Length: 256
DNA sequence: GCTCATGTTCCCCT
DNA sequence: CAGGGGAACATGAG
Image (cartoon, rainbow, N blue to C red):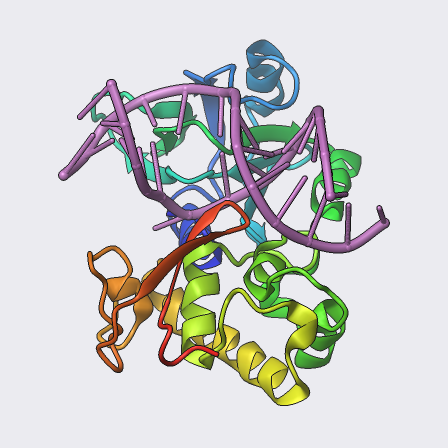
């Protein structure tokens, strides 16, 4: 699930359920997902801490805990769950026992990761990312992509340029802007760059309330997994290819 | 058995 | 250095 809109949904979920509570214990951490320290140091450092409100940078959920900061990346299958007595789920990779219940980090495929960092460690993590997409203005965006020769979709998914877009949001935005995802970024003219920027913002803004990329009637996301997929606007058969190692869907009749 | 999956990183080429 | 291609990571679903 996790692209920017999903992680923004997790942030709201975290702040609704977990923020403000004290950590009674950190249990069941999957050591293969822990990117810093050991299960023991992790648990000791978090126990007794009060969780503050979380923020987000790209696809990272950043959860300060009055000293150390818990950072979660959800990979392709991660999510949060709030539990009050339910049995442990097979894919729970971390259980934080809090005053009023349990916050669980659940992740089937175990991509992504869990960090517990100090301020320097946090700066190191976020420093590898470009600005968050919700903080990026059009002029910055145009500057970032203007000289790149890679496929525009590859540029949109490069988290070091700007952070938060993923496979679905990139395809959806290019579909909305009617731009062929295979074109070199530097081949877009100024009008196309503007159109793409506003399309991305629209896709993100429209998705945020849902906490996911919604399969709206005129959205590519609705049709991309059908086979053969049909363009939700013109009915043409969608084309499927790979860009940057990711399955890419687009309408060959409308996207140029 | 096979393919594919909303992510990232690393390694090898050109 | 920029960028492409593929593999790896781990666990399913169809």
